[in-house]
Image (tube, rainbow, N blue to C red; front, top):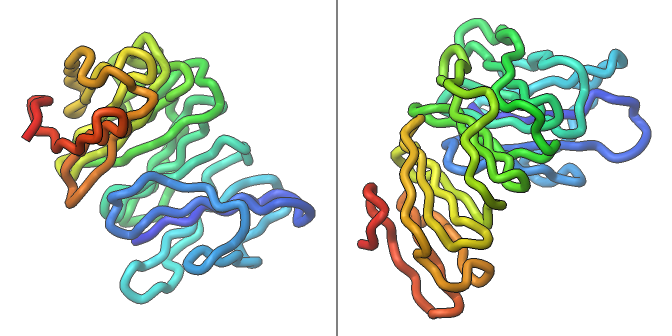
Length: 231
């Protein structure tokens, strides 16, 4: 299944559409205008100010279901792992899970207290990662009931320069000021200090499902192992 999140506000003005690849390897992305593969579907609009999460079969391209995920918010983002869909409100810090069998929406659960309003979300078998890069905080919610150990989120003590999720469901982060490398294996957190001297000129990317650290200042491209070393 592939997710598309559509704004169900008044028909005047901008239409906010979010999409994610069907294999779940990328994070949700906002499109300012409908584009190929994410066309506007007028039937998905309602007049009550809610938003609908549209589930699309990745093989046939047919709409499987449109699910009401609650009151509209300009900070709503979507993510999925396999057939399971999630919607996270970056303004409220709440998340909902879509049951893949019934397409029913679970209750909204707070996963991150007092977020900045701009979050990114990664859904994996190990957990639902909710990242607030501006505040430098990460919440790891259980995939089924969205429970978290600490509702305030894990503090990284700095803004996040870049982030990726590898094929095994680990979240990797590069500190925007320190150049520290952090990674989450589910709720387990790890850190390696000062892996790059110029973090502003460095970036984390994924190649064939493997996290890769690109250091433009040093002109190096190095793959990362599960323990944070270089391959």
